Amino acid sequence: MSKKIRVAIAGVGNCASALIQGIYYYQKHQDKNVSGLMFEDVGGYKPWDIEIVAAWDVDARKVGKDVSEAIFSEPNCTTVFEPNVPKLGVKVRMGKVLDGVAPHMKDYPPERSFVVADEKEDELEDVVRVLKETEADILVNYVPVGSEEAARFYAMACLEAGVSFINGMPTFIVSDPEWAKKFEAAGIPVVGDDIKSQVGATILHRTLVQLFIDRGVKIDRTYQLNFGGNTDFLNMLERSRLSTKKTSKTEAVSSLITYDIDPFNIHIGPSDWVPWLKDRKIAYIRIEGRLFGDVPMYLEAKLDVEDSPNSAGSMIDAIRCCKLARDRGIGGPLYSISAYTMKHPPIQYPDWQARKMVEEFIRGERER
Image (tube, rainbow, N blue to C red):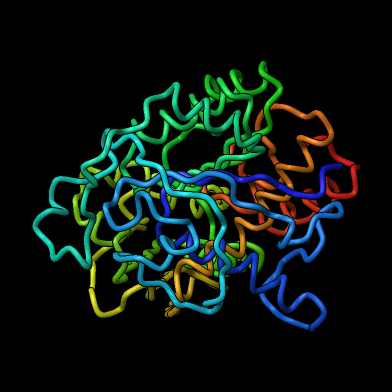
């Protein structure tokens, strides 16, 4: 078993910043009782066994910089909980723009938006070459929501390079049967799609819905409204980029409901951008149902959380499980960790069952 997990990143935004900070935070505190990990040890791999070996972005303030500097560059705005990230000796390369930057982003101040670098873009063969030269095990896809072409560009590079693909955004690749077959045929383990935060709006909503179902309360309608201040929420003001995101978040909740419910009675999705919130995300959840005697009841909940560390709390496990699968020679979608850490996995399972499956996978009692 290789001691290090060699990871490449596409999209050096807030999520990448939180993930990389976390590697060094837990390395520094490994002998202390610290919180924030669902699994401290995954088949012998600890969080600090992750090593960043390559990175791509398209923003002028990040391209050409060492990753350790780029993660703290504008427009990143997540909490800095580990400022002492050492110089990694890995420069951020110019990625392929494709549909990665929404046209409306140019209408906003540069410190809040993207500034596309005037650099030569890496083509597919360049990405494949870098992945091979750096001996990357895994590429984590963090390109913005709505970047359908860009996401598939990096997925294809992984296929050609023999590198695992973890899809943290809602383009349906790992959950698409055709793509899944390609990775399985190539013997490459993959995880996706659309990262589900440690304790985010999706997992909270799913837990509340499961509670209603388990206790015999019939759900009539529900909504989840999300807003925040990072570039992800600014990007999603362009509603045409939201189709897969809305589907992903909605199916994550509706998949638990075992009876028919009018689609008009389930509303889940991002609703607005509030700049001063920065990387904070606020979610309002409401569920209306009927309990004993068809007597109505209503539940409302508010979640206020720093978005990107919440995401990294799941990605740190997805990465380690993916490396474990590589060590074991397993190819194709990893159903257990995908169901546990992703909103739109190939197969949806209740969260308690997904966790049990992950534990079995780590112990070697389940193949995928």
